[in-house]
Image 1 (tube, rainbow, N blue to C red):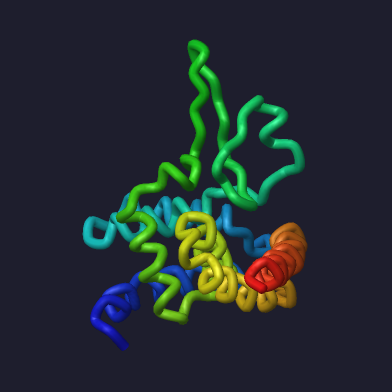
Image 2 (image 1 turned 90 degrees about the horizontal axis):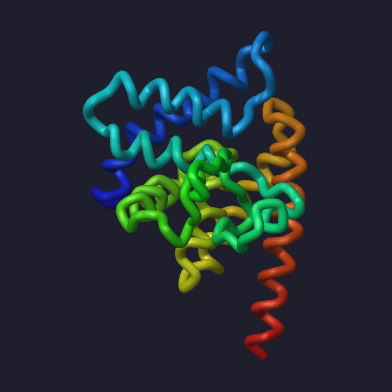
Length: 189
């Protein structure tokens, strides 16, 4: 394991333990990325060291699966790939989005996402989310990130501890990622 990947191991362990706690408790609702976002957000407030990494991971979990027609409802085209902002609000004719569109994501956040995914040890729900976001943020490496996302989404779609909405989204993304891969292959010929 490279030193860069090893440096992310403790963060992966924390994220996986949050997932395992949520997935293993029958009194809790099925796991969603938004619930992991909330847990990580609370964790970020309690730690000083690693704040940047936990924040980047929490941010990735804040994206919602894209509702149909999101661009039409707010009147603009956004760079969110298969996702949408969690919150959209207006004040004084200014639109605010949280989280930001992926084309505005900082290079450091994208670097952290790459490091976390590259460990190969994240739970499938987080592995799929980060790799899918990276396939949008890193178009030159989109085939690599899409393959990782596809494999993780397959595991998510079969995990009964994960909320039905997340599992359906995972199945839909598998089909879309496979279609995109086939289209790239045919266009390359």
